Image 1 (cartoon, one colour):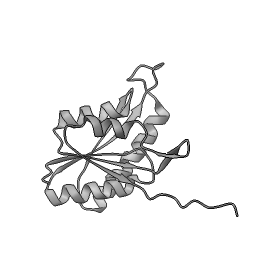
Image 2 (cartoon, rainbow, N blue to C red):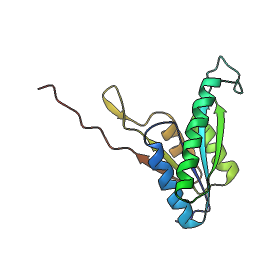
Image 3 (cartoon, helix red, strand yellow):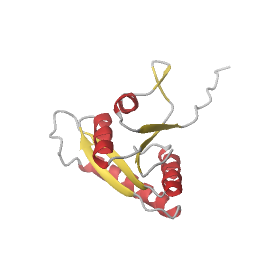
Image 4 (tube, helix red, strand yellow):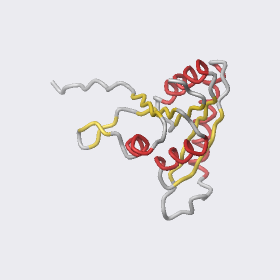
Length: 147
């Protein structure tokens, strides 16, 4: 797979570091540009461009960490903070605007109602992205029994 532009999403989860490292490795190997994005999902009761200081501060901290990881790998990544109603459409729209060849998404091992769940963002991106999509899922935590 030839990659000229790649996009990796970060959310502040523990899988972010590994996802950014993998994205940097892929981009560096292909001499590609890499965009690291964080999407703040804005509730409908607020304007989409509302100044949500707590969320913005968290996002900037997460993006700064991603930049440090890229620098450690001797790679330059461009970071971007987006605000949208839903993360999935924002990721796909940016991928289209930037003409990326690959979207890499890190995700934790989440359960909903006792079953593994992809959430809503990942299925949206998988269904609608015009490019390759790679999911980097963290390992499943071992369940402990009460005996």
